[in-house]
Length: 566
Image 1 (cartoon, helix red, strand yellow):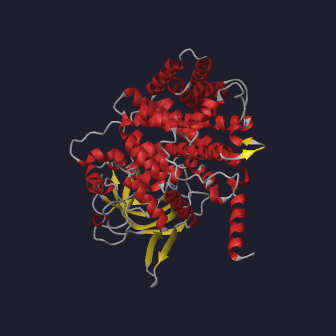
Image 2 (cartoon, helix red, strand yellow):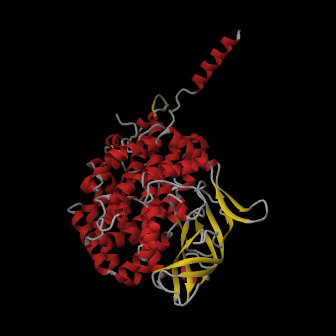
Image 3 (cartoon, one colour):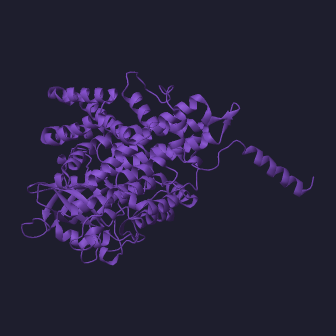
C-alpha cells in the first residue's frame, strides 16, 4: 500500500469515527437563534436595537469568540507582586484572549451604555436602554462569563459615583466611551477605565458592618468628596486590574463608601498591595483578589456613615446582571443540549425525537424561558424608574429574581450536560466550564439567605411596594386556577409576620415562580405557558427534570427553543 492509499484510508477511518457526532456549537447567532430572547426584547421595550443585537449575537456565537473564551479560561490571570529589583508591582497579567473578550463587550457598551445620556448636560435616558443592555449581557455570558464581572461592576458603579457629582464629573468621561484600555496608567492618560469593588473582609463576610478597615481624613475634617487615608484589608477585591474601586471603610461617623484609584493625582501608584489571586471553582478568566491597604488614598462618596446605602446603589445593578447572565448561561446549556440531540441518532432515531429526551429537553426549555422573561421584566423596571409601579417591582423583585434565576441555573446546566452524555464531561464541549461558572451568581452580591432577608426588609419598610406588586400579580393571574391558588398561598404567608423569618425562602421562591408564570401566561405561546404553570404550580411533587409533561405539546416547546431555526 503506497502513502497515498494509507492517507486516504486513514482519512476515511477518521470520517467514520466522527459519524453520528453533532457539529460544533459555533457560528450560531445567539440572538436570531433564540426565539424567546427576540420576543422578550421586543416586548420589554428594546425593539429599536434588534439590528445591533443581531450583529452582536453573531459575534458572541462565532467560532473566534468561543475560542477566545477557551483560551482565556485555560490561561488564567497571574499576579505579579514584585519586579526584578524587588519593587512592588501589584499588577495582574491576562492572556490576550481575555483582552479580546473585554474589547468585544466594551465595544458593545455593556459597561456604560445605559449612562450615555450623561455625556451631555440635560440628556435623558433612551427608551429601553436597560433591556437592550441586558440582551447584550445575556449573550456575552454565553460567549464567556468571567469577563462579564468587570463589565458589570463598571456599569453598576455609576449610580454610586453620581451621588458625589464632582467625582462623577471627573470619572464618567472615561467610563462612557465604548472602548477598552488595558494599560496600567493614571486614569487621565487612558482612553477608558473600568471600576471594581471591595466590600467583604475575612472577619465579617456578608456582615460588612463588622469591617475593620479604617479611614481618616487626609487633611482637615473630611467630608463628602474629600480625600481620606485607608488602612486595612479586603478578603475579596473583585477585578483587581481595575482603574479604581468602590470600597467600604470605617470613618469617624461609621461605615462609609470611598472611591479608591490605582494611581494618585501626582501619578504615583496608590497603596494597594495584592496578597494573592483566589483559586476559584470557576470564573477562572477573571481575577479576584485579597488586598491590603497601606496608607491608600480614597475619596468619600456621600456622607460618612452612609456606606451601605451608597454602595447598595451599585449592588442593585450587579444583582440585575447576576440574574440576566444566569439566564443566559442556562440558555447556552439547553441550546447546546438541543443542538446535540437533534444531530445525534440513538436506537435508530434522532435522540431529540425520543419521548424521554423530549420530556427532559422541553422541561429545561420551560425554565430557561421563564428565567429569561423574569430577568428582562426586571430590566424593564430599571428603564421605568420614574413610574411608581415599576419602582415597586424593582425594589421587591430584584432580590427575588436574583434568588430564583441564579438558584435554578446549576440544576438546568447539569441536566443539559446529561443530555450530551460523556461528551459534556470533556472540556472540549464547554459545558464543563459553564457548570463550574453558574454557582457564582447565586453567591456573588448576596447568597440565597441574604436575598430572602432583603425581601423581608422590603416587607418591613416599604409595604406599599409589596402591595403594588401583589395587586399586579393578582390581576395578571386572571382566572387561571394554578396562578390564583399560588397567589392566595403567598397572601396567607404575608398575613403571618411572626413566621416570615422561617418562611422567607418559600415566600421568595413562590413570588418568583408566580411572577414568571403570569408573564408567560400573558406573552408566551400557550404550549410554553400552560406547561410551565401546570408543572411548577401543580400538586405533583417533582425533584428532577423530565416529568409531568406527558400531556404537553413538547414538539411546539422544542420548536421554539431549538437554536437550529430554519
